[in-house]
Length: 183
Image 1: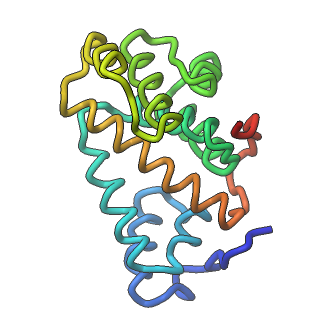
Image 2: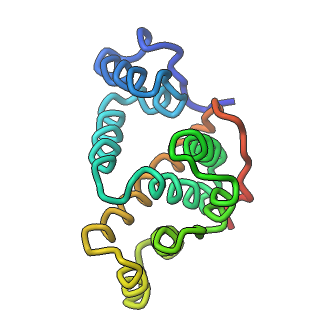
């Protein structure tokens, strides 16, 4: 059971959140519970949507976004985000089961993506205190400075949703996948 209010409908959301939730519904065809929880604060919802929208235009692509999201959800022990991103990864980004398993393990079966996922996991586990060797490894795999920043921001965006969902204990509205729980 959720510890914070899951707004039951767009019409019952705070007025400033209503157009934002309508836009989510238009884009996704539904309004997942994450958005319904964050909509308790229209300012927080706007901030999340703005960052998410900006990063959707980065050069990493949807597959790598989902790979990172899956890996970070596993690191942080967020069942909601793992369930959501495994579903989105499989159905929208077309990741196969083997790739999703690799992502849950902090890796990828695709060579370049593997460097991105491993770096994102390192950023989260080390709370940003990565080494020169970590930067060199991701750059050697073919990522430039802008993409390194994009990987970091993708990781941080997922920390944001992991933490919101863990604080709220958001009811999962995707096929449930349980994490192995954060260490």
